[in-house]
Amino acid sequence: MRRSKTGSAPRPAPRGRGGQVATVLTVAAMTAACSSPSSVPPSGEPSAVPEAPALWGLQMTPVVPVTEFMRDLLQPAADTLFTSVSVVVDKDGESEYGPRTDEDWARLRTAAVTIAESVFLLKIPRPIAPEPDRERHETELTAAQVLEKLQEDTVLWDARIQAVRNVALQAIDVVERRDTEELWDVGANLYQACQNCHYDYWYPAQRDLLIELEEKVRQFREQSGSATP
Image (cartoon, rainbow, N blue to C red; front, side):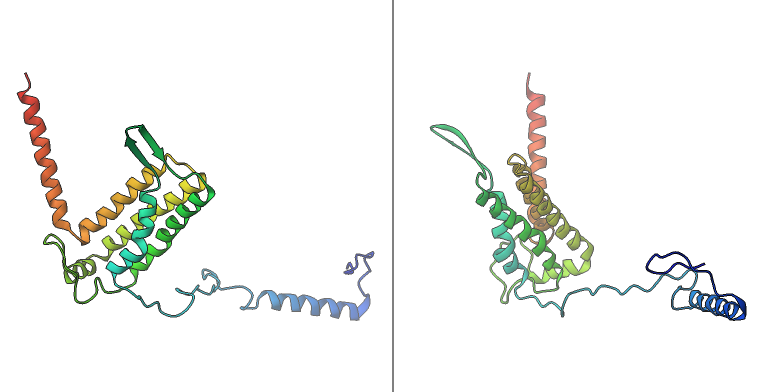
């Protein structure tokens, strides 16, 4: 029995030879449709899903080398987060400063989003420094040395980029919750993430000097403690 599309009472199926033929043809058509290879993928094979393009456009081409990218884009945004909270001690006592207005918080959010989004652009191959290379301290690597070290271990480079981005994501969360106290942690974490990358690719010798200095301080404290009556 069949029910019409309008929902009226069911009508009896046609009787006789014609009704039997119609029924057979209908069942055959349904069987053919269900067994069609276009409607059901072969067993064990996933249905074809078009892959999303890697980029929404053509190949990306960098504009500036790494040093100028840091100076012009990342550093200003990082400075905004570094200086978001502060303590000033003067003759009148101690005063704490931090974001108070909607504009203050919006400025911090812009800085955090800028870092979170733009730091991934450092994954695009680009020159390390403009030519000729800038003047540098004797403890700093040359542009050629930085590039060689990067190409030897791209996993480390990617990890340093991700570490900075993770702090930026933390900053976005803190800003959305307007937690002034946690901005201190954001500044400290961002500084450490940046320094770890600098120690690896900019001035690794300075990290060695810092480790040596910390060891001397530790030894001095131990000797001073043992000499105390």
